[in-house]
Structure formats: structure tokens, C-alpha cells
Length: 353
Image 1 (tube, rainbow, N blue to C red):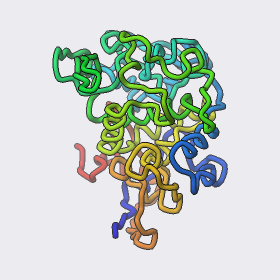
Image 2: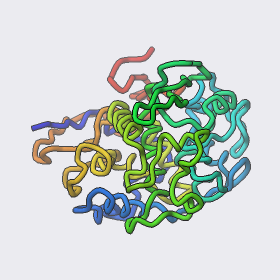
Image 3: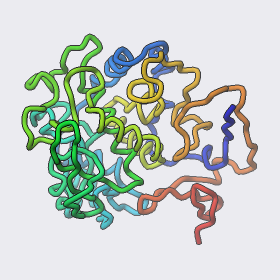
């Protein structure tokens, strides 16, 4: 039996965006209970598909205004997942120098139409323009040859045995691999097949994802035969990254900020273990929400937990004399720091001078 402790660092006062999973309507995900596989994915789609689309670009009510709240650290830097040379934000809604808006789930994969998917900030990121260009419309992957580096990305080719073909992929830094995987899970759910198997309007042009052109990365990463959406090799990689790089405080803060504008959620950030019931080790089994804890729950150890508990009676609590008014979380250059009485600590409790 696994036991999860409520550590001091998991219950400190957050200073981030006010809308969180805890602010959702009570029992928002409860009706997922008992559903499995495509039915579960279709139900989650029904929760998140209708949302507010932000205008693509700069200015008030546009993508760059969202980024100002979702991707700005405590020192005003843009937390660019494509490059380590971070630049500072100017005013809300303004473009960060050297950056553009990157579709992490490439727009060509559904045909490039300027629709809800085109403007969905759960997969849009502020990106170094050079790194953005280098990754093109390639899928996520681990390149093994013809490797080049652009920003913080590794770009190159892999070999697909069953198709007997080489194709290009891009690999982000380890600390962001789970972020990208959960963005892909969100996109496959929000714009993939409906519960009845019909196609989403976003994908209607090609009756699913575009798989007719070898120059479009979705040909090698996606499939249109069933609710899984991804080809097996890509799916295995995404699940691996999802497990290896659990939900971080940066990711929670970002999702909350996006939710403030779009008025929907990424279920795989709120309840990371839901991905296992659709694509992972719990596939084929009905979801049991009693065993899942959300990333906003004090029992969820950010950066370490996957949100599954074997036995809710096995949870221990650790008392602390520190009150919320004496603590706060801050992000500095993308690293979470805990301030207690003005002293800085890492998430593992090490003092930072």
C-alpha cells in the first residue's frame, strides 16, 4: 500500500492566477466515473470543447495577452520552452522580442484552418522564432540521426520500422516533455473524434488528421482509425514523457491562466492519471474517480505525483507550524522557489542563498 504525505511544500499558499481546478463547479469531473477508453475520452471532450477562443496575435483579448499571464515569471521574463535565452515581457498584450506564437501541435496537422484549434492557448506557446522555424511541423520524438540544435530543442530524424521510412522529429528539454505530452493529449481529446466516432469540424477537411502528405508530420504521428488518435510509437513516447515529467507548478499556473481566458480546462493537468485510462496502463478499465486526486489537492505532490492513490485510508498528514501568510511560491527563470519568512528554498527543501 502506498502512502502519500502532505508535505509543507505541497500546501503552501499559491500566488498565481485565481482560477484553479478548485474553482470549477463542484464535482466537475465526477460524471467521468465508470467510463472507459473512447467513451471516457468523448466525455472529457464534451467538457472542454466549447470554450472561448482568443484572437490570434497581439493586443487586448489576444494570444499575447494570455501569454503575459500564463508564461511570465516573477522577474518578468517570458518562460520560453523552446530556448533558454529568455526575454522580458513589455506591456500586457505586447510581443516579446525575438519570439512568435508557436503551435506545439502543428496547425498543418488538421489542414491549417484558422479555427478553435488554431487559437487554443493550451497548445500555443511563446517561442523563440528561430527554434520555432527549425521544428517546422514535426512531431515530438527523440532524433537519432542528422541531429541539429536550435534554441533548447534537438531536431533530427528517426526511422519508422513498419513504414520503413525516416522522418523528422523534435525533442524538447526533459523538464518540458510532460508539458508537451499533456498538451498533445488535450488536443487529441478536444479536437479528436466525438464519443459517437464522428469527426470534429476542425478535422473535417481530411476526415480526421491529415495523413496524406509525407511533408506534414501528422502522417507519421497520427491515425484516423480509432479514438486513440496517435500512432503507436508516438503514443508510447507521450505516455512515457507524461510519467517521467509529472505536472509542475509552472504547468498548473499556466493552465489556470489559460482557463481564465478560455473558460475550459486541460483534464490531463487537473487529473493526470486520466491519461492512463485512455492511452496507458488502465486502458480498457472503467475510471474510478475515488482513486484519483487532482493537481490542486494538498495530497498531490507537485512534480512527483501522478494523482493515483491505492488506498485513501493510507494517507498521512504532517503538521506544520508555518502559516500560509508566511509563505509564497515564486517562479524565477522557470524554477519554483518557496519563500518562508523571506528565505528561499527549492521544492525539495534546500536553502537557496
